[in-house]
Length: 230
Image (cartoon, rainbow, N blue to C red; front, side, top):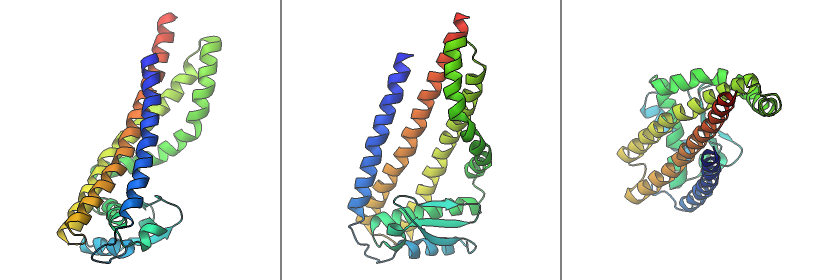
């Protein structure tokens, strides 16, 4: 039990370090102007057009590293720095988010599965924290594990979601990197920067998924240990 608890904390610390490293990498590569002088918006629109996708809008959103693809309204949402940026970091992010749009257009199975989980996960996230907190209190005070078991089941769903996200993110990056390379959006050195930036971005998802798994194991061991004492 103690080992899993320590592992959870360790993954949390690693996650913060990787997040810091990701931001520093993007800041570094954002200072490298693209030889092609294309903006993130132009890159995104070109990638969509090259894949025959004309019903997806590219828009600018507030915040930093807030870039995402929204399949419900078919929008590629780029942060202002990426939308207007003409650098290796902007190229990587813009193409990556369009990679999700391509996945959507081509009915990529993992994206479909992930999207199908979202409504249920949104409901689960609304109840999960309170169920886990109150469930832990009841478990220690009365020995009843019913409420905590429900909370853990919802947490398990969220953990599955985090792992389903991994192939979706890696595939989008692979599509992005292949396209920007084959279409000469970036030169050789810019490509390596884009690849490195997307790798660090992917690592944030990997560590987050492993941290959730460690926490899930903690809850499961807690439930198992309590039942073995009954």
